[in-house]
Image 1: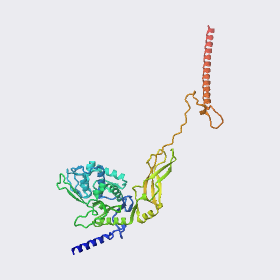
Image 2 (image 1 turned 135 degrees about the horizontal axis):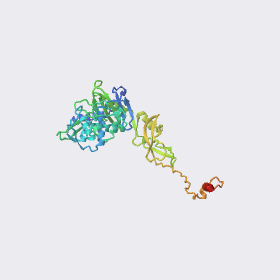
Image 3 (image 1 turned 180 degrees about the horizontal axis):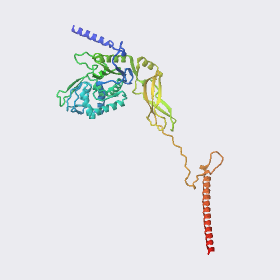
Image 4 (image 1 turned 90 degrees about the vertical axis):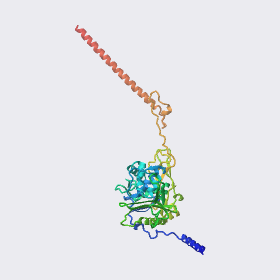
Amino acid sequence: MFKKITACFAALLMAFSLLPTVSFAEGFDPNEVSTPYIVLMEASSGTVLFEKNAHEHSFPASTTKVMTCILALEQCPDLDVTVTVGENVETRGSTMGIVRREELSLRSLLYGLMLRSGNDAAKAIAEHISGTESEFANLMNQKAASLGMTDTHFVKSNGLHNEDHYCSAYDMALLTRYAMKNEEFRSIVSAETYDVPPTNKDSNGYQLTNSNKLIYTKEGEDSYEYRYATGVKTGDTDYAGRCLVASAERDGVELILVLFGDYSNKVSTNYRFENAAKFFDWGFANYDSLDPTLLNLETEFTFPVTGATETEITATANLEGHTVTDKKDVIAAIEADPTQVVAQTALTRKLEAPIAAGEVIGTVAYQYQSATLFSVDLVASSAIEPAPIETVPAPSASPLIVGTPEDSDTEDGNGEKGSSLVFWIVLLVVLLVIVLAAKAIATTRRRRRRARKRKAYRSNYNRR
């Protein structure tokens, strides 16, 4: 009897497993979500699938720690290095519980930073890398500028409120897209829990749980875990409201969602997690991606070049690593007829020699129905060298060197020769005339002086 019940139960479970997964996308309208700042982005291409006030300044709260974490990973590749906590430990807001002069690994601090949103961990990391939080903030802003985050300014490593500390939803999506390319970062933000080993100040160590309910739900709490979730960070302050940066991946497509500004007096505590699942399902249901290398698109382009041995230069576009993301019907239409994708080139420099092989000379935008799908750099396929300069022989400095008869021949067929020889002969004659004239003048003057002297002598003689 027991075996029959077990078999029936197993069959029932199998039947349920064959049913389609319930999707929050049905009937979901992103425009009805009250969150003031929203961006839904496809990670591979950076295509924005939905946005709301995407470029307006907003307070990011602890989602700031996405920047702190990726900077720490890049600045300190050795995550097992020991960090000594400073004398002034941050105690405001959420903390992982470290104390001054405590020694623990950078790895442990990073998990405390991202899972427990430790403000104390953020400060310890900043001081370890840059000496002071203000110097670390300079590093944060430099990184933000390099990523094209034009609506962002960081003041603190932990995101505690400051009027001059802000970030737009779009900029945070850009940052997260970049950070998620780091495998260590992905491992940290997707962890449900982490056990920090004992330290010199705590013999038990620390037990950390992820505050992102899409990843982990504590026992006894309502579950908001999302089966495709891959990260990344929550944030909460009175000024910023409840914030969430989340990511999810399904069937090779990864989406990044930024929700900023859900205030507790306007929405429920878990409003951001509820909407995150709906946004992801809506994105997966309505959008698709494809590899452009499969479309046989034009990748070689020829342009005229000046001042070179060659008259043309060939530039290539490398489509590897790029993704086309759009609505599913658009993707299907492109796959059915790739010739509808048009390449529009734009040069970024004057095509004048020299040009080095591998040099970027422009960009090409691949467009479908006048909308740009993605852009790629145009790279010179080979070097272009300057044309040799034609030199005209200078006339000899010596009048005795007049060149060969061949050099002085004209090409008009009139037989005129020796033009340079005539020039020098004329010049010599002129010089000779000048010399003779000068000599004649000098002789005349001498004769006149002698005549005057004789005349004076005779006059004096007669007076005697």
